[in-house]
Length: 455
Image (tube, rainbow, N blue to C red):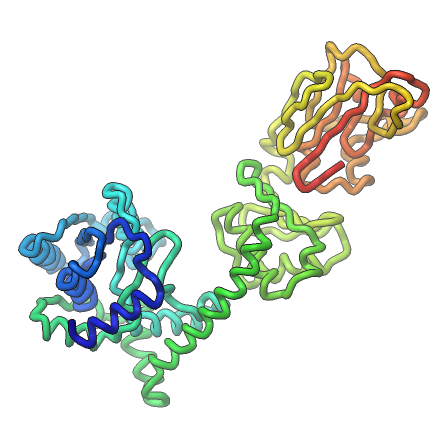
């Protein structure tokens, strides 16, 4: 084992890249970086306890790509390495408005992950180098990024993707191929400044190198430093996120305003992005995150901002993410369940129960006289629902929910108790004015508990 190979082994061990590895897919294109990756693992396969599989994608963009894929297959065949290939016509399949670079990357990763599942492997290795990382950091800076963007290409990802060559410069990998007599191919499009990365690599970095010959190293040091800070912030935000109510089915999430007062802005900004990403599958921009943060500082409860097809809505005690069609009253799920005595009934995210009581048990506003419940139902609100809140007057449920400061995000998910068209009881409002158990010796108590909202 030579010094260069020891360097890669040391890097892999430092970051524990192959802990519990059940199999490694090597993503190989035929270029010097990926052929060095393939050559390294083939030569040192006895040092690893997991099986290898080489995977390549012929994008049909260049005429020579077929020859390159055939060479990689032949290389593997001679050395007894299992091989899988995907041929896809990227130019004809790429959707309008999507760059071929982005579409190609998505196709490649979809293929690699399909193989990962097919063979029950745990890891996928790509041949990204320190040069690639420096370019990525610079591209992120040009585009505008957070600390996460400054961290560049992660050494490993939670989905099993690892980059064992991030410690290596491209020139080192070319030299390794030459020393090991490994043939490689040069992608002719790398010299064409038609992609943003090529412009950064071929134009911008050479200009910066005139000011700082070690600019690539400087960018990689920045990446490492930012990565440490990013991981620290992320760990705090992740711990807080565990306690956040995120209902993906209902497209609703709620972040208590109290958390804003307890946490640093950097951590809280990350928390907002995490919660929204898990709820919607979309990433908030810097300006969107700032808009949401402004809601936490705002004391007016009617404020809201639009985030893609969601609203962030300030309520009395939280900022809620709500799908727009839900917030506007469309497609709400109406729920109606027969009322039962002394039985816990699931109701969306809560549990409701009618309990038989007798004096001297203390009465509260949720107590109603003991009546025949055969025709009684628990249901969600409807448009136009009215409730007798005083003995001489009625008011719209919608208006009463606002007056009682019931969070917007749960108003369509909490129960009303109805019998023959009359609302006897409502969550947050208690028993109707003429249905209170003030003078009753036997009565019912209606109990409803909602996750993160206890009556």
